[in-house]
Image (cartoon, rainbow, N blue to C red):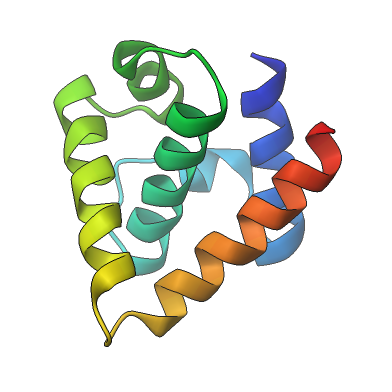
Length: 99
């Protein structure tokens, strides 16, 4: 669970968001994309299950699965530069703190 808290702290610092804003059911694009980033980093860097990740992000495990698929689509899309930048910024910060 430490990895999840590290990730939340990074997002809080980088995007000036409170934890409850990220794990809300609100579907503002920026929040959805940040949840996609969280889900993917946690899936790649931890042994957390989709169910656990979903529980922490306040979403269903099938939504976590969708987020992982959508993440790949967004990274491949030429129109998703801002998503790519968010992912890189958060990933680099996470890996730097996690080492």
